[in-house]
Amino acid sequence: MTPPPGNSAKPRIGVKTALSLALTAAFLWLAFRQIPLGEFARALGEVRVLPLAAAMGCQLLAHGLRAWRWKLFLQRTRPGLRRRDAFAALMVGYGVNVAVPRGGEVARAIFLQRAAGVPFAAGLSTVITERLLDLVTLTVLFPPLVLVYRGRLEQVFPGIGNGVLLTALVSAGALAVAWWLARDPEISSRRLGSLMRRCAPSLAERVSRASGHFLEGLGGIFRREAASGVILLTGGIWLFYALGFWSLFHSFAFARTASPGLADALGVTLVVAVAYALPSPGGTGTTHFFASQFLIGLLQVDSTEALAYATLAHLLGAIPGILLGGAYALRARG
Image 1: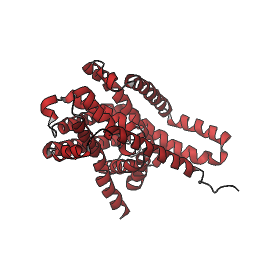
Image 2: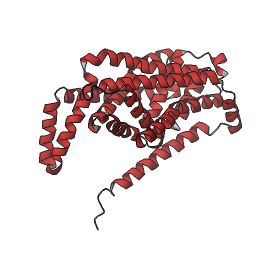
Image 3: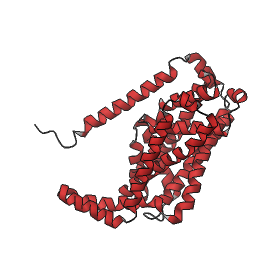
Image 4: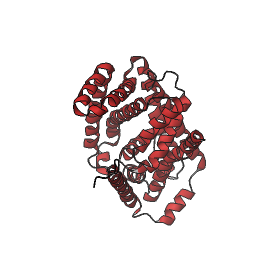
């Protein structure tokens, strides 16, 4: 008996969900396995609130700049796009990512289509290129970090250098392909349409129409007139992320003994970015493990305080998406 259409996708989704939950559980176990929960709760209870609030403010500013940069990517597709609509879609995407790994990217494009009329394919392609740009930025910032820690980073995270190098090659290659496809969207769309007519004639027209929007969005990142804005906003995004993690240092007593600086905060920013790149819902577990190991191995922070810091670092990323994203989604439904 032939299964109903679409049912074959359900087992794949179930397997992906199970694997992501298993990954989360494994990293949470690695992070918490030797931590006395009473001491962990005490460390959280002694957190200074003012630096924590400043850290949250920096996170929100970074999100605001990210939404502004996304608006620049979509300038050709939707010239009148409002920054507040881009910000709302971004928060909805972050909220979905907390529950469904990579689901937020699709949710962002869907929400922006409904809120601002941006074609779904164009919104999705800009999200993809944004992720590639983030990976390239991460690999650009990594070598100075290696110089700061003089090989100790590899001792704490064995193989991270090779992993970042591979990421640099793959992401740069993917951006090059995106540029090649987007430099002449009409030709690329015709080629894809011709291929689809030979392989799947029934889908050719639909795919050709969607590919036009997709390639139009894809080219938004490569517009010369937007280059300076994209560069400045990208720098601002990463700067505010680092300032947020630096401010979070000062919520804990170890800030007076370890004296962590902005370079250390940038290091936390990079390892948290790696944690979020793994298919764990909202970086849960991976952020706890990577951020705490960074503090323990490179700054000699007490393991309990390090994990308390990592937990708050994770919440700084999750709470805006849950609260603001949820509010925007509810308002859109109403």
